[in-house]
Amino acid sequence: MTPELVRRVAELADAGYRFALDDVITLSEYIKPLLPFVEIIKIDTSVMTCADLAMLVRQFKQAHKVLLADKVETIEQFQNCLELGFDYYQGYYFAKPALLSGKKLATSQLAIMELMTLIARDADTIEIEQRIKKEVSLCLSLLRLVNTPGMGVTKSIHSLSEALMVLGRCQLQRWLQIQIYVGPDPQIQFGSPLLLLAATRGKLLELVARKLQPANRSMADIAFTVGILSLLDALFGQHMERILRQIVLSEEITEALLYRTGFYGDLLKLAEYLEKPGETGRLLMPLLARLGLSIEELYPFQLEAFEWSNSLLPNL
Image: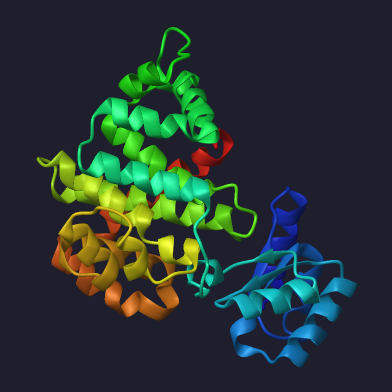
């Protein structure tokens, strides 16, 4: 904490830059010179007792700092930090299934899973159309989707049959896989974080598969499916094995989701390692070597996946 460092941070803060102080576990004399120029304090909640955490929150709140709870890994940690008055939360507490006995899927989610099964067994378009028509919200969402400017349609589409023709089976399947995280059931918590994480996983796996197997487009589609479905257990509060009994999926997808085996299992492990570099960083490089992929090649895929998933929310 040199005078030169503090002076440089002060200059940049005056120029409009915003600073966060990371891995804070105490309000020590060491960090006090930076506090006037720091807006956000990221507190490492994993190494602190509840009493010490509460005291630290009071101290930084008195200093009018924005507080971010870092390394929040369980629902209990999240609830505790929420009660203490944190402003932001970082971690994967929402990605771990809180298994609830007797919990039932919402009607709309059951309908989506039925539609995914119809597509998997290559059912007639008429049968798919009739099933969608039974769900008014799905029907309206689909029509809204195909009429967005990004679809490149030159005229308005008002019929479901036209919408299905424009979208095609592959894009319909992807839309359903994303839509399952946007269910209207108010009892399903953390929908948006799960949607973002699942969508990011799906896109990342698709991009990596396309890079490693450029001649086989279907492998990229399968990789997307593995990524997007990998958080269904957290979404539904059920074991993944139980959920997969309700959907028709290929053996390679099922093996990847349940046991992280095979090519797609390796891709899913890659996404999970990237999400928790502190815990699994040592496993990342051997996996990349086995896949034949470099960090330099992976980085732009991560960026593209983040940007793609963030772009979904305004349209859902």
